[in-house]
Structure formats: C-alpha cells, structure tokens
Length: 438
Image (tube, rainbow, N blue to C red; front, side, top):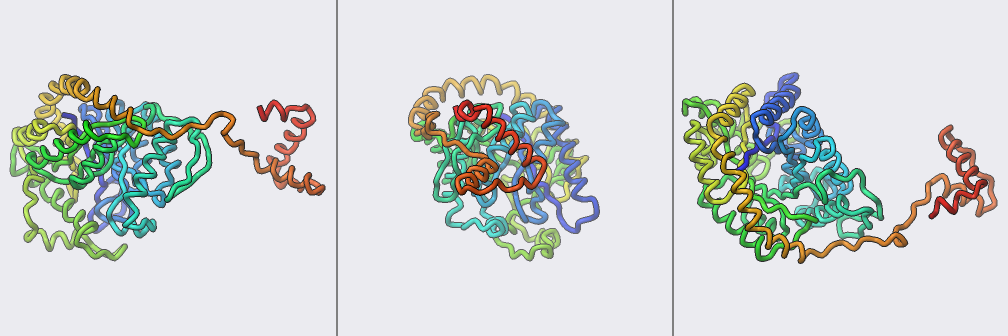
C-alpha cells in the first residue's frame, strides 16, 4: 500500500500578520521532508472562499513550488475543480501538462466539482448541473492533452474551436486521472469511467472493503474509460498523529483532526457563513465538548504499533493508498515533521517491502480487463489535415478587408504592428503566400 500527505491549508482564526506565509512555507518544508522520507504522494486541494477550512485556491502554484524542492514524490491535484465556470478545460489541460513538465512527469490529475455553496455560488455553477459539467469537462480536457490538434467541441456547458493545446504532458496520453468520492455511488461512477477514486470519507476497514469490492467488480465488468488511459486505484484519507506516547499523539493531533471535521461540516453540512466575519474556530471551541466521537476516523492517531494495525486493515481489504490529514486546525509544524519521520522509520518499511509484489499481482490480474475496457471506449474522431481550419491573423484580416473595400490600409498603431505589415507585404511580393498556405 502506498502513502500520501494531504493538504487543505487550514488556518483557524484569529489570523495574525504573516500567518498565511508561515502556513505555506511550513507546508513546502513538510512536502520536501516527505519526499526525502520516501512517502509516495502529496495531495493538494482546490477550494475557494472556504475560510479557515481551506486557503488553497491555487494548487497549481503550490504544487509547482513543491516540484522544485522534491525529486520523487508524486504531486497530486486532490482535486481540480472541473466545471468550466471554475476553470476552462483548455486552461486545466495547459496547467496540468506544464506541471507535469516542470516536475518531470510526477503529476496525478485529480478532478471534482465541489458541493459547497460558497464555491458553487461564487462561480455561478448550478448545483443541479455540476456533475454533468464535471463529466463533460473531464472528457474534453483528456482529449485536449491526448490529441494533436484538438478537433474542437460544441457541448452543453462549454465550446471552443479547433486548437492544438500545448504543451503536452510528459505522461502520455495524460497523467493518471482521479475523481473525488464521498460516497459509494461516486465510487461506482469512478469504476465505470476507469478513473482512480480519491475517497474523502472516514470509513472503517469493514466499510472500506465494500467500497473496494464495488469498485473493482464494476471496473472489471462495466468500465468504459472517460480518459485515454485507465487508473484503477482507490485512495482513502486518514487522521494522522503518531508518537511513542499515545496520550501525546492525541494531544498533538486529535484537536486538529476534530477541527478539520467540524470546519468541513460547517461549510458543507450545517453551517451559516458570513464571509469575512464568521469565526469557525470560536464556534468549534464552544461545540468541542458536545461533538460526537469521530470513531474509526481517528484510527491514525496513536503509537507506531497502533498506526501499523490501523493501516494493515486497509491494506488487507485492498485499499491502494492511504493519505494522511496531518495539517489540521492548529497542529504544529514541528509535531507534523516529527510524526512523519517516526512513521517513515518505524511503520512504513514493512508496507514498502510488500509493495512491488502487490503491484505485480495487480497488473497481471487487471491486464485483460483493462484491454477490454479500452476496446469499449469511443474515441473523439481526429481531423484529417484537410479538415483542420486555418486561422487568419487579425492584421491580415484587417488588410484584406480594406483591400476588398478599395480603402487604404489603416495606419498600424504600434511599431510591432508596422513590422508585421511590412513582413506581410514582402511575403506577398516574393510570392511566399502559396508556400505559407501549404
């Protein structure tokens, strides 16, 4: 089983000067440490306007910074918001490919839609359309990265003409594709579409087994890939705070994890939020004593032996990756680093020893099903060279329109525009236009 670290960039009130700067710099240091320790993935969310819960509105910037401070760790969008009002699909394709290039092929492309009204309303994404918008955008964004050129698209939620989206990613046809899942129905959808399931639900191992069994049964029987490659994987999140003294592990990590769940509930479930004014941490402190127990969600908080037993249960039921929520509430940077080091030294090695053999067996088992799934995919029809529409430069259009009307060419407003016009005239005089069109 593989392991990841997971970031929301939480920042409870009150906010002191320099707090966000420290938050981001500490997170960069933590990712750099995780890379040195051999942890497999670093996941970064995309959220907008979710004060205190998540100050991560530009994950592509954070992950790009991580890419230059690390060598091996996989850099995951957990997730990219795909409805076009958040991010135009072509911009997503460009950003994912660029991050893949600067990281030398280490990107995991997670996708989602959000169910927080602060985000959906802020970007005018209709609640009843968000799933369909996600589906359309994901499929077309994958086409953009894989096709040369992209033929263009007239869809229900966005459209664009034929263009060649550049750059292309290192990982072809595109980086591994994931979707955020908070319930079993989305797990089933992920399996049908052949994409990894990033499960942001705190489930115990018995429930995890049902999710895993559903996912791989449907993947084998029904998968029709939405992308140009499949990514059969299930990642689950866990609390995380490890120390040789169990009470110290709880003191260092339990409150932060409970704030994580409380702030999540505030923005997604039960809260009323006044932007710029609501104090979630203050409300959490008042509610702390009456909050229901998180139960199995706190299984990642304890001694190395307790954490090892917790993780073995997920490994045994077939979970492919566990990602740790170690940065929550007011958890301290130095405690997070100490916990990561202890985990890497005393817990992770036995799982690493089993990983290569487990990966080999999984590849062999799934190979025939992947072949059948890819055979079921209906690919977007590429354009023949004769069908690719040429795009006439704006300056040339202006010149040709003036000539057609018998009018003098308008005076070019800038030195650059005058240079281009002179170049056009010289090409015409030297009969280069025919060659240019060819």
